[in-house]
Image (cartoon, rainbow, N blue to C red; front, side, top):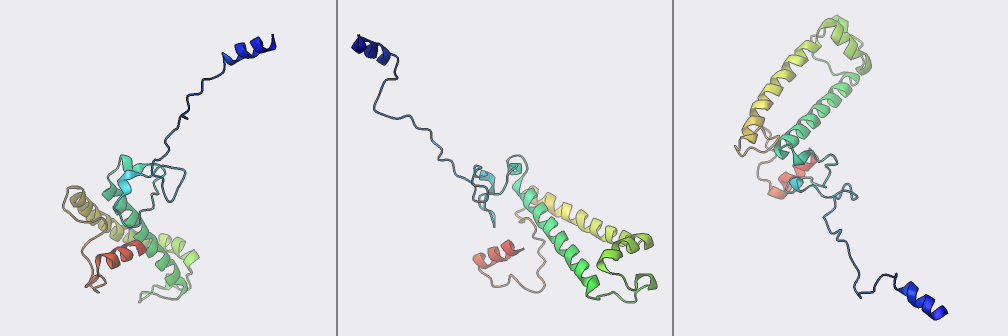
Length: 172
């Protein structure tokens, strides 16, 4: 009786086929975010570690994204330099009396009050217009690399190998 019970129970057991079912998880993973798949559109760009968690590169041209990344990085560098320059005592002379004794913390409100930030807005706006023209050329297939305005008056890139140029781009 026990043997027939065992035999009837084995009828409902899964069959052994000798091979195991396997799921392939061999998709390339991002270096920066190893729990996410690698964004394919990032290949070939300097400094690529697969960081695109929102997958912007799937629906926005990579040259546009790189141009924006470089522009915002350069703006941050200028802001930091200006913030530190005030506390180091660097001034553009002749300095209006209203600006005497300003620190980096108090400068913003004083410059807004006297209207000096309007000039900065004008110059940064002009730079933005020029940058937009350059970006449109890049997206139109001109061959211009994102962030490259052909401006190297000191000659940082003169006689440099491609590896050295890429290292300098990564540092920026």
